[in-house]
Each structure stands twice: as structure tokens, then as C-alpha cells.
Length: 119
Image (cartoon, rainbow, N blue to C red; front, side, top):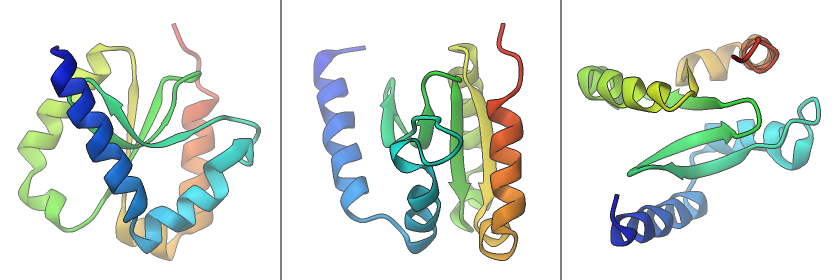
């Protein structure tokens, strides 16, 4: 990967953090500053050329919130997920409507993923 692509990803991530969606803000309010079971998360964080919604580096967990646009880009998302997973990350995709309607259940899924065994 070229340094310029890394800088571009970092600049894009900064921009995304400034214009997060209400659902991203709601989840971030629970994940930030180690508030969620003392796990440290980052939001809109570059991994290679991609920017993931949330990541816990320590537990190698990526959380992606999927809105309706992701239905149209499912193949691209699968390809991206495969490459990120090949780097040792677990991808947890949460649909926006799941987060909106079952917030506590979604947090339970995050905790389950965080507490899994890592090789």
C-alpha cells in the first residue's frame, strides 16, 4: 500500500467521523472511551484502503452498520470483508433496522463477538 493511499484513507476517516449518522452516534456513545465492558473502540478507522465503522484492535473485531445501500453492494462488501478477515479480524455486520429496533440485542452480539477466543 502506498503512503498516499494511507493519508487519503485517514483524511476520509476524519471526514466521516465529523458527519456520523444518528445510529452511528448512538452506538458510539456506548462504545467510546472503554464504556462498553472496558473494551477500547475506534470509529471510522482505516484498515488498509478501507474505512470500517468501528473496530476494537485488541480483540480484532470490526463492526459495520449496514443501511439499505449495502443491499446493492453486497458482493463488494463480501469481497472487502474477506480481505479484512484474512488480516485476522472478525466482521460483525449489524443492519440499521436491527440497531434501531433491538439496540440491547445488538450490544449482546457485540459482547459475544468480543469475548470469543482468538487464535
